[in-house]
Length: 119
Image (cartoon, rainbow, N blue to C red):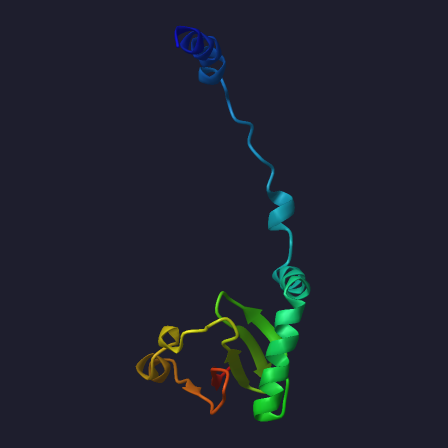
């Protein structure tokens, strides 16, 4: 045990004198939001394709990808936005009707939960 603490004491001076080097984040800051959206779209391609299919089956249009979150994929059709809740398996976790009224949104009649509102 004393040997262990002796080793710690030897390292302590090095740790105490450690000074972090600032990171240059200018490259990260220069990435455009549209490029990040394209990266996200490619990474989640299968999920987006499925959401477009579900939307097409329900409204006749597959929509343009807008974004996604932990519970659903957002797609735009003309001046409307649709959120296909592809990852919500417990309907009790969905937004309430009251919440949707606050957002001027509503559910469409579908087996997969989908909400819509003006874009």
